[in-house]
Every structure is written in C-alpha cells, then in structure tokens.
Image 1 (cartoon, rainbow, N blue to C red):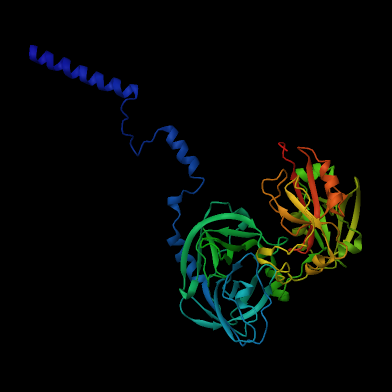
Image 2 (image 1 turned 30 degrees about the horizontal axis):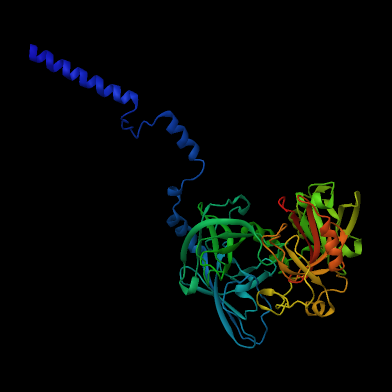
Length: 496
C-alpha cells in the first residue's frame, strides 16, 4: 500500500507539473488540423478572398488556353521602307531592312469561333502573305481585317474557318500590381511556350504618352511572343504581349485587353480606328505647379504646348490654360481628358471649360482625326546620349544646380528649335543642386520661370537671385528631344 501510495503521488505530481507548464505557455500543444482555433479560422476565411499563391494552377490555365493560341508567319516581298521605329531601346524583333524580302513570326489568339484573331500590328505590318498555324497543326491563310498602329493591335481572320476554340477575355481594368499572370506564345520558334510571372506595373508609358497604357510584367517574353496572350490566374486574357526591353531579360509589356476590345467594332467595320484630336500637350496640375503658378485649382489638365494649325489653336486655347471640364464632366487628370477626346469621332464638338487668368470660360473645339504617331526622329543633338554640342560662352553660376548659356542661332538651327522659342540653354546639371530636377537635361531651353520670361543669362540670374529656400519653381521651356514645350517643377532646398 505504501508503494502504491508513493507511485500515485508521484504520478499525480508529474501530471500536475505538465499541466502547469502547458497553461503557462512553456510547451505548445499540437493543434488538430480539423479543429483550428476560431482566430485561425477567421484568418483563413479572410485570406481566401485573395487567392493564395499555392492555389494558382497555371497547368490548368495553359491546358484551357493553349488551343486558342496560334502561330503567325508573316512574309513580305520587300521593296518598302519600314516606317515603324521604337524608342527607349524597346523592341520585339530584329531590325527590318528596306528593299529586301523578309519573313517573321509572332503569336496571336482566337477571340471567337468564327476565326477572328487578335495580334500585334507590328507582327503583320506590310505583310504580303500571312500563315496562321493552329494548336492542332492545321494551317490557314490569314486575312487582315483591321489595324491600329497607334496601340499596336491588329485583327486577323481565317475566312471560312469555324468551330474554333476562343480564349475567354477578362477585364484588364481590374488588374493589380503583384497579381500572377502567364504568357503563352512562340518565342524563338518554340511553339506554345508558357512562362509565369507577376504584374510589375500598370499604365506604363513607352512610345506615346497620350495613348499608352501598357501592362508591365516579369513573365519571360521573347522574340515571337508578340501578339500572344497575357493571362490571369483565372484563365482570362488580360493583355496582348507586345514589347520587351533590350536592357533586361525580365521586363515585358502588354497592351491591356480592354483597350483592344474597345476598338474591335471599328476594326471590323472600317478596318481602321478614328480618334478625336484636339492638338494640345498636357500635364497634370500638381501641388508644385499650383503653388508656383498660383493656380486656384488643384486638379485639371494644364496646357503646355499647342500643335500648329490644330483644333486647339483655331479655338484659341493657350499655354497655361487649365482644362477643368469637358461637356460638363470634371477633368481630374490629363489622361482622363485624352481618353475622353480619343473616344469621340472626328467632326464632333467638345466644349471645354478652361480656367484662364483666374476666369472660367467655355471653349467649343471641333475635333479632327488624330494623326498617326510620328516617326521617332534621329538624334538631332549630334552627340552620344542625346547631349548637344553647346556654344562656347561663359558659364553662369549654379545657385540651383543649373548652368545655363545663351541660345544662339547655330544651336537653335541644329536642334530645329522653332523661331518662337526664346530662352537660355541648360549646359550642365548638378544632381546635388538646391533645386535638382531629375527630368531636366542638357539642351533643355528655359523660356519662363514662374511665368516670368527668360530671354538671357542675365535675366535668368536676376530671377534666380530672388529665389528663397522652400520656394516652388515652375520652369516652362522647350524640350528638343520631344520637340515640344513642357513644364518642369522644383522646390528649392531648405538648406540652400
């Protein structure tokens, strides 16, 4: 009995000790998978609203979409000059030579069972024969129905072919940065290759700031991917793969599918896209611009420059005008205004509410057709990296980190500067200056500072001498690399 009592006491003490440790948190008990605590269950329910990474199965996505992806071979007899040039070292194929036959390949995807296919314009540009190969190996002659070089989209049809598998189209407006996507295409001739990545950026501007709205992704895109689909985790096409960067292997760009779908009716009916055009270069009203120009509004599209003989010029629109409404609808950004006008037909009237010198007035503008994007001009600056050969003249001091020189006739002629442009030329930029402006470059012509004209180095120095720490400055000038007038803003460093 004594031995039994001792054993009982020892067992009781041991159990009590272990229970105490558990209650004190010194040992964590194993949680049953089938009965998670309420807190964990709540977290799991909340997280399920955002699809977890492990649940994305691109094997299923590729299996569903692959039958809709096609290979496109485009052949040309040559004899024509390739007018399409790209900037910023972005490309999607080897250079094309004039007066020589060429053959290239790209991708596309079927959008309905009657044989309509979306691809890039540059895939089929000036092609004399288009051959489309389906996923099952069948080949057909393709017919170009419509093209839109402005956003690099083309619509191709396989006449008489029916019963095809169409790719489901998604909503690119709902896309988010960090969302998983995959690209399917025929890079370097490796048909139906699948790559996976995420959305890196939305709304990237590459070639035409007024229209571009590219989706940037790190999913691998190579030669031959052009025109192929960019697909979300639900198996919906949300973009058309269009361009890659020559300076990196994991930076690709796609045209948003909503932008392509919006022009499909015009492509099918007219074979081309007509967009309304005003003829103004715009920028958003920022806090610095509002402060430096003493604007009474904090939103709207500020007019920087006006195209000669354009609807805007004929209607009397001027630089420094702030467009705040179009046909009674508020304009918050310049992109909103551009999208609105581009969506209208040429010949229609757009009534713009303009804020000018503190007064509001309505200016009716009769739209014309938006011209095609101009060719990229060769480097007119004559030196590597777009740096101009500046005239030899004395340097000014650098109170704001800028050295300026007089604008002489030779320099203006070399850069094709309009006769109406007067000012001083930026000769050097100090990145540690009191008002460093990342976007200002050598060769930029400063015409005005806070609406005060700058006609000489002496006037520039006089205006800058009055600047105090914390002041906001609006530089209005001419950018020779863009061939247009523009605003640049800076705030003077408090430590100056």
